[in-house]
Image 1 (cartoon, rainbow, N blue to C red):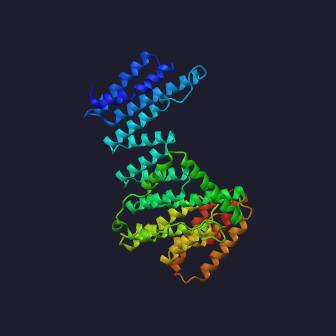
Image 2 (cartoon, rainbow, N blue to C red):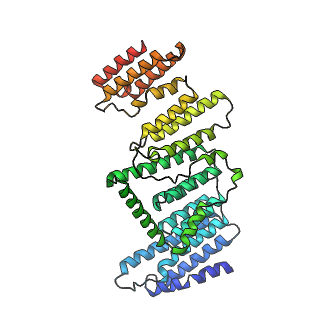
Length: 424
């Protein structure tokens, strides 16, 4: 037996003695456990070891722990219930196996994923932070890891600043990854949506009530953190958020991003943050970054329109937000860039219909108002005859696809007559 294998087995002796003493495992079963552990230790210590060997070792230990737990539940009324080494030693061993596996095979995402999943299940916040810190240092261009870390911060730790910092640091390493920008925008919209939904449900109208709610949530988060290995917790959090980055290697456009520590107090009417202005700041940098290397003007125009529509489609999903304000900003940006483009002009002309449904009581009046707006624009516009034809075709196509295809009965008849009139 190698020294490493012998050391690992000897460390488990107190746990095995405790299991036998409590009557959870027989002597024969304990001998079997020792043999299996010895076999696994030899396998992972050998030169030909593979990530699958570590995962098999973990699976075996999980099965042992599951059996121990079931027997304990069945016998807890007749055995010693005081906390002992056998209760926590197996989870610690599993963590140790994962740690050795990721050290030996740092590129194995299967090992890292299993390590994170198990640490989360054990609610070991310190270990989770350690794993993310090491993994992000080793694989800074793996955007899925950054997303996972940001999701952990936001959903489990309720730490919006930490999640936001992860997105910004991810962008430093993956500036031209479109998915990162879109996920960042989605995250900010999701946060604002949850914030406004909470206020609506709890009727947090006054600023004083909002401040009190924020303070209570921050207190709960800190208390939760203090319960998980107290002293080292803050240090671990900094480790995950403070990877070493050379500012000279960072795209200068990222410096335009706001710090986003602006107060979210107040209402949509009096606070630009709640209207989505921070999201729009990210949008501006996103567009500038993604098209920077495109030199062909037609290709750049096509790409900007595609990117803008992707952001618009994300905004469409959050109905509690001031979507019209954000959509109008993006559409006006397109109009400034391409004032005579039919698709951009129709986006502007149909903005008032963007969130109108056939089932709305005001559908007919809203549609009539929009058609009058379109006709007034066409009569006063200085567009060429050819450009006006393009705008008309795009406008008719919009009404057809959004409303006519889904309409029935009188509404469908009305739309058919309207579209026929517009085509004349």
